[in-house]
Figure: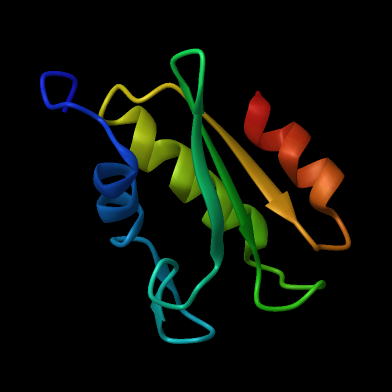
Length: 94
């Protein structure tokens, strides 16, 4: 992946392989990805879960991070609108 030019479309394609089992679709098609931006060589992915108490939100956040890391994409993943967003975001940063 590092040889291919990264852009929002490429990042979105990578994220479209992450499945949200509760809603039965990928996180991109379901509209759970709020924004994809690049800041100083780091891709920032903001997403929300299907409800503020979603028990698999941390799993999806980790999947996003792992999917990008597997392709040598330096990223920051931010969950929004979840009761435990702060804790989950701190967990993902480790």
